[in-house]
Image (cartoon, rainbow, N blue to C red; front, side, top):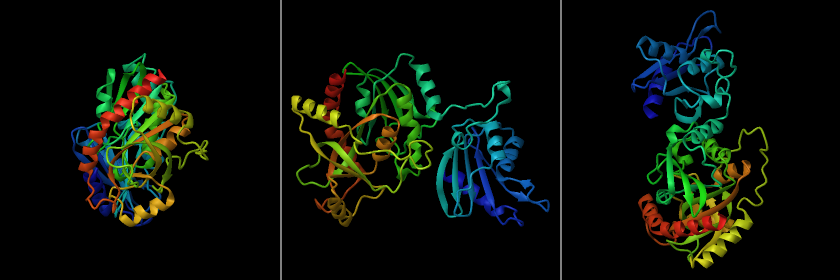
Length: 402
């Protein structure tokens, strides 16, 4: 992405906009990996002129290529500059709705959207009399991909596996994996310990759909990026979502290797995946984590002789770990755990009508509590060590649900 934004930024600097003084640069990546750039060009007939995107497309066509795999647009100003209606249609001629469009400013990256989010109704001449092409939402299209691969999937429970916990997916019976890259709208994780696959199969006699890996805000993706993933789970039949994560503990009595059942959360991300939602945006989160399921999980844990603490999870944007002062503040707010994920997925799941259960594996005591330096390697190591206990609990709970 960085090379594409850099190319768009260089094109931005060459733009010719003497009438509007609004410069735009665009860069397109073709399947060959080559990058083609364009800048907006105005003339005395302003506002008639040439936008940056078609300039880049013309360069691509002249070089003999006919497909766009990635796009970047750079412009100045407080508001995001997205491709205009005409440019969106031009992009749709050479790319599908899952085309990632990275938006930036002269100062750096700002947000990534898909062409489908910008232009749900792009016309395709090959469709004949069919009106809008790809009118389906991204999650409906992803669900179609799943059903085509596994017609009888119909999972009841979806799972999201956090850092170092991906091994649980390897134990799914009759498991069939689909890469996120093959599912429209699914963002690709860039963090070690997050595989980037949807695995469907059976656990304890219960059909499940397991998201092996998640994305985080600190990876540079918009918080809404998780919506297609969660809504796809709902579209293929899931009624319940189990979320897991690796977290730091704010309690001395809940140390590394502990399992914690999440009772509630505190959103310190500064963002919400429902921002911009048209329907039901004012979501009631009085019981974000289902009380009935929490009680059943605790009974299963007692029966399996697995120690299970309970606590409140607080999410920060990361990627840096928290300071000791922040940890003291979070304790005062009532947090027991701190991490960099989960909350957006829970909000999206409740908005989609899914019941939610959440688990944290404690990988470390939070900053200032142990005197040890914090690292992602420690997170992966401790998560892997405690993952076996969580896998046993999840398997027993799936048997209970089945």
